Every structure is written in C-alpha cells, then in structure tokens.
Image (cartoon, rainbow, N blue to C red; front, top):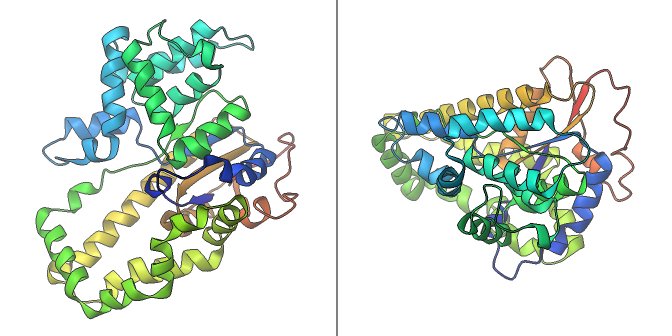
Length: 341
C-alpha cells in the first residue's frame, strides 16, 4: 500500500524526474498489477444514473474522465458500459505482439469506458511517432490525452509511468463515492461552520503535523527529498497521527446535527468500498503482487482492513522504500498468497 501526496497540488515547476528513486524501488517490487485511486466507469455510470442523490459527485471526481469518454464515444460509438465490456474482451485476447493500431484502439476503448488511467497506459506504451490519431483515437482525443499527461497527478506520474515500465496493460480503478449522499447540504454546512469556528478544530489546523502536511509540495524539490516524503507518509506513525487529528477529532468535538460522526461514517464507508475493489482486483493476480497507490489519509484504514483478508499478505512499505530497496524483491513466482503493497 503506497501512500502518496496529492501531486495535483504541486506547482507548475515540479519536475517529475524527482520521483525516479521512488519508481525504481516500486519497479523492484515488481507488481503484476497496479490499482489507483480513480473512479471506474462503472462507478461514474452509477453516480450519473442516481444524480438526484449525487448531484455533483460524477463531475467533481470524474469530470475529466467523462469528458474524454464523450470524445471517444464519438469515434467508437460505445457508451461507458459497452466500452467496459469490449475493453475486457480485447485484453483477454491480447498476445505478446501488440501492433500500434491495437494499442490505439485499446486507448480509445479505455477512454470510452471512463478508464483514463488505462487509456494513458496504452497511449504511452509506444513512442511519440505512434501516438497519433487513428483506430478510434480522434485528433481531439489524442490532444486531450497529451494534455492530461503533462498535468501532475499521482495516478499517471506513478501508476501509469510504472505500468509502462513494467509492460502492464492497464490500471485498476478502486475509488468510490457511493457514500457521498450522506453529505447533505445541512451536514456540509454544520461541518464547515464547526471547522472554521470550533477551537478544537483550530488547534488541529495549527498542529505542526497538519501545517507540514499542507506544505508537502515543498518537499518534492529534489529526488532525495521526494523519496523521504514518501517514506514519512508510509510510516505507521504518520497514519496514526493523521487519523487522530483529521478524523478522531470529528468524533470528539461537539458539532450540530452530529455532522462530524456522519462525515466519519462517509469516510469509513468509502474506505471499505475501496478495499472491496482492491480485493476484487487482486483476484486477477493469484500468487502475485499488487501495488495500490492511494492518498496518504487512506493508508491506515486500508492496512487495517486488508490485514483481515484471507489469501492476501500486505507488504511492508518501509522495506519497499528502503535505501537499498532489497525488501522489495523481484520474483513473483511460487507465492502462496498475493502480496499487496
């Protein structure tokens, strides 16, 4: 389980090369699959279908995915649902010699299914000369994929980049927002008021841990600093302190309408559903390794939940990110249970 800072918050001067030591260690972990905190097309379709319950969720958390899905639908004629079915069939039939035209077709199909991460994996598997319109990829979609790529995000800066290096064909989307309906306007109002006025929350926001967390982007200025940031975020102490400040405070402090308790319920329900998606993705790699990349605040919950699973052995992130990287290992054969990092 790799906890990551939110790379979409870094400035335009961020150099992705600072992540190289991290990527080297993750490559030595040698996962057979990679799961990322991205909504699946299935989840987006459900959020849209129940828009009366989730009026902003699909657009807020998957707007770019939906935009590219519409572009791809214009050339493929496939809805989110039909594109997902075709993507699975195409992946099943792939052999070792995949032509550029097949990858462009898979790019379009993945984009149409709402799976932007996997679309980028296919798009980046070939050199610039092959990343051109054709086989279902329109000029607009090609330009949009290139534009997305230059924008910083841990899904592609870590997940896609690593998948391309390891010659993987896709990413697995594990994010979930089915509990967003708990966060009614009244709950949001009461919680926002409490956070801005309650002395307990003010103390939390001024805590050195939280202040440092807000400035995490400043720790990505060099390769050594970036690796150290990832090590800190993947330590047990980090997860416990983050949970205590961000979440347990909501249970301790009095908030009108029990808005804090409702927010924690939404958070835990989301984490549980995400872990269910991880468990489902792991079924595709029995006896092999799965890398899971999530926001740092999720890790403590994920570690606890995954530790209760049968047939899974959570790996120690500290060993994977060690100076020599020897804890990662490279052999994926002969394992009795899948290792989740």
